[in-house]
Length: 188
Image: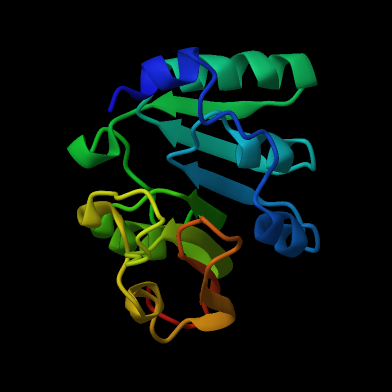
């Protein structure tokens, strides 16, 4: 799938942050945030506009160019990187972020660096599509879909603020949604 081409055509251009994200993050004190596989940066822009110091990373050069243009237009600063996460072109610094956001992206070997990258008291907010046997749902490569309970088990021992495996609307794929906080004194 050529994400640069999709972004050029205006696909995947949802500019509104995920509702769960807005609901939860609105009450947080701004700090340092990482938006993993940020796409056009809907979450990064929202955070930066509310005083967060944001780092955003995506493999699509076009998406990052659009994000940089939008951040300039909105007068916010976002540290943005074009990097292929699967090739390890971006490293998540340990104990560096108060919030790490992942929406609609699954790379299982990133869970450990994400957990290590969150400071004590910091939060992971993750929304990822799941395996769904509904025949009305568009098929996807199962390598990019979570199994039931998988996300929860990745963050075992963390304080679960929110966890759901549900379908938001008819014709939509089931998703796992999680907000998990790293406890003080807890190893990642």
